[in-house]
Length: 278
Image (cartoon, rainbow, N blue to C red):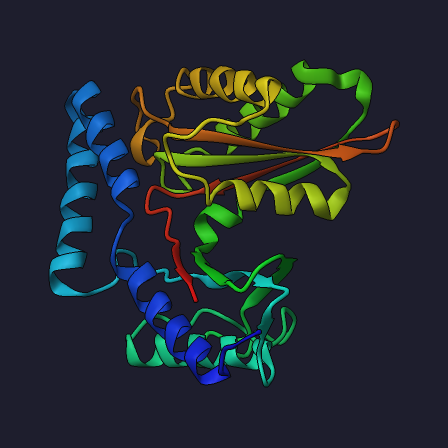
């Protein structure tokens, strides 16, 4: 049995919170670079400015975006891991320290009704999964409101089929326009129920840019949606161009015979997430 002290978790979460806001993932930056080479005019100029911004953030150790998001944390706990304390408190303590010491914008309100700021970006949204082994994996994903606000869930019926899914995804992206700061990573969750499909969509955003689904149907749908989304001419920051999406990720899950739940979770071009394994 491996023992991991709460203080270790807190320190790692603090580090991840600061790094996620500051350092773009290399696969995402490479995808933006590739997109820039395919564009011209204003679209190309915008992508060049995004790249310049990301490089400056890393050089100056400052956030790449003023909206440093609400913090979502995915945790995988092995059955041979013992944590002598409250893991939720340990994570939230790390988020609080990271946002205060990293001078990151505090964007969380205590209640959606009274709108009073908590002043340390807590509480975070924590998803815990139990696995086998002696590892603790923490994935921290700050999510800005611009992209999250344009995400959608719809309870389709089986008769809607794949065509209904594609129609819903495309209408969601078209309606979003420039508000979620394209180019986007588009996460699509299909199956489960109302809340499960939304979680599937969000989890899909954590996949590497250049991977493909291991499910042949999902893989084909990813390719079709990617091509169709990039024909919408939304383009970088909604000002037109060939690049509306950098990637489309589809995650599937079994569902009820009478249901076809679909969620679209939109991620902006920063695609902020950092991982640690203890």
